[in-house]
Length: 280
Image (cartoon, rainbow, N blue to C red):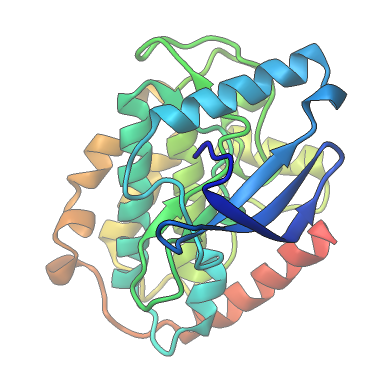
């Protein structure tokens, strides 16, 4: 998050909300493009103003190659436009996400809203870095301590402990990473039901599987990492630092499959279309 007065040229509106607009702007000194969120603070309640201050504080605190400053659009939209996509590519994507989460957790920040819409690309160039965005629901915590911070997140990515209204902390981000990795590998989520109550029951029970034939070509190592991320008990769930040391992540050239996953791309196109339809 950057502060500016006359150092940037404000251009067209990309998004308009109830109390804010997001405009594309160009830093005059460098020519670098930014997205500027301009907020009418006079219309905010005291509670909303506190949330805004918290988001700004967290964004200033986090300086990492896989966080912030983006011009390349959504990761999931980029994947379906690629000519080739493999399990190894999924490994590289989740590695970058885990690196950003590990950094957040090291700085005692919990994102709380990991989902495809918040996974963006640094630029439109091939191989651009994956960036974690939108810290509007992020919170600051005291180390590994857990507490009830309120119900926050997106339904399909919520962890069991949040749904049970138990104390929670950093592990909620790892659960969401598990959901994202599952989608990256087959193009659809591990938990799904049109009825939200049934969806939440699935999540609380950790009721997911690896159906044939789409999972038959996924390596056991990839499934094992998902299992360690989607562990219902948060105290037994793998951490971001531990996940980054798994061979499927750190030694993907020898462990992850490099077979093109066309079925995954096709399913991901449908998944993206459903997401856009829900937002409309």
